[in-house]
Amino acid sequence: DSILSNDLGVWEIFLPNNADGSPPIPHGSRVKVRMDTPSGIKDSIPAWIKYSVQTPGDIPYNGIYYDPPEEEKYVFKHPQPKRPKSLRIYETHVGMSSPEPKINTYANFRDEVLPRIKRLGYNAVQIMAIQEHSYYGSFGYHVTNFFAPSSRFGSPEDLKSLIDRAHELGLVVLMDVVHSHASNNTLDGLNGFDGTDTHYFHGGSRGHHWMWDSRVFNYGNKEVIRFLLSNARWWLEEYKFDGFRFDGATSMMYTHHGLQVTFTGSYHEYFGFATDVDAVVYLMLMNDLIHGFYPEAVTIGEDVSGMPTFALPVQVGGVGFDYRLHMAVADKWIELLKGNDEAWEMGNIVHTLTNRRWLEKCVTYAESHDQALVGDKTIAFWLMDKDMYDFMALNGPSTPNIDRGIALHKMIRLITMGLGGEGYLNFMGNEFGHPEWIDFPRGPQVLPSGKFIPGNNNSYDKCRRRFDLGDAEFLRYHGMQQFDQAMQHLEEKYGFMTSDHQYVSRKHEEDKVIVFEKGDLVFVFNFHWSSSYFDYRVGCLKPGKYKVMWGGWAGGESW
Image (cartoon, rainbow, N blue to C red):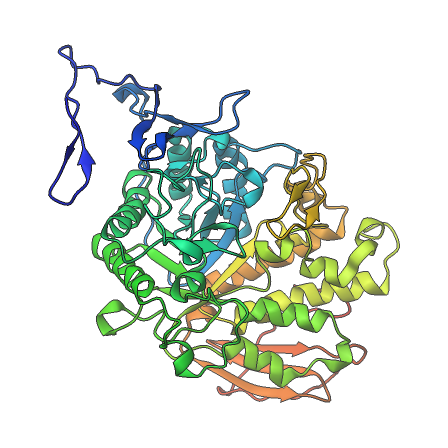
């Protein structure tokens, strides 16, 4: 048959089944699109490919025609959970989710990690790096094949089994989706798909993200919109994901990508010539489509600019996200940890935690995967540094760094959950203060700027999660994990994150005390570096007797 151009100018061909009913292209076959372009023959992986693999000895990935026989297709057995009133999200990466230095699998994640997440008290799991990306070290953010689940973790059926098991456990499954940019690979990605620079992307410098070394979509192109909208629906419909965390929304909404600019809150910064109106309209269309087809689906947007109406419904003029990530909180904690305890301002902490746009819900976090990457430090590492290597055994000596670090690690996480938003996120392992950083296996490389970056001999040693540390009852990590678990269950019982009642009654700079009410609970935090208080009076709205639900001091605890 001939390939024909339809009335939208899109070339298409329909291949009927063979006479015996078998597909014209056998399941598992390698496929590619070959185009005779003005610059010569161009081979590309089909843009809508559902599966791609890297065969031994090959550098680029190969597109695979994926249509298994009915008896091999996974059949979902469990209904999708309803959207929880308050989201408590466990942020994960399948590949690094093993304690062993290796790439983990969907199957092992299903059997080993999901029960852990449930036991810890989280009600949602966010999975990163699902869309196929040929460079593992990109953390999944340089996507090459948008409709294909990463084959390095297993098959599409394995991923479906993972999601079904999560639903059986009552966990909402969110996908970290990347529509903000694409890999600049020409051999196995969308870049140069038809031999031109502009098939899916802006031409010239606007089509190249100078910071991320990637391609920028042209959101004003109808076929790009169709491609991305159908991509969002595909993951919800085919794999039963319950929603998305949309990466890099700030980069999409502004032609300057939010880089080398300061957002002060002035409205001309949001609604000026630097705003990519096509991208904002795309985000509105995407949210409208998702919520129209799947009312229970959750969308969370990553925006550092504070774009007004970002998390308001499209019907009232908003961009349409259910939540925005409260990204200033993590930055504030790192800023404070770089200074002295004496310099902490209680009013500034409260302001950062509560500085949210009216009626726009936020997912807050003390730290995410960003703070865990090589070149940065987790909160635990900022607090305890090298002492974590030698003084975490319960039957051994401690140090002031360890005692202070464990106490502040707990306090920072609890006050962030209590006052920071209507949802909460934690990156896997940080609940128990996972030591060190994440460093993907990599060789030496030269950046576009010419800067040389040494490799790590392609080691997986720091690209794993030492869950055994949090489970070891003879280590202080275990107590930190127990605290986080109790924190999740406290929120599950009282639902304080989404309570309408919130009142901050004290921000005492000399005492370093913060007191606030959230729902039926009164939270009292003493951030003083040396003073403890007895018979310390705090106000409360409702008269009567109050029961101590939780308490701790000097690194110890009575919870």
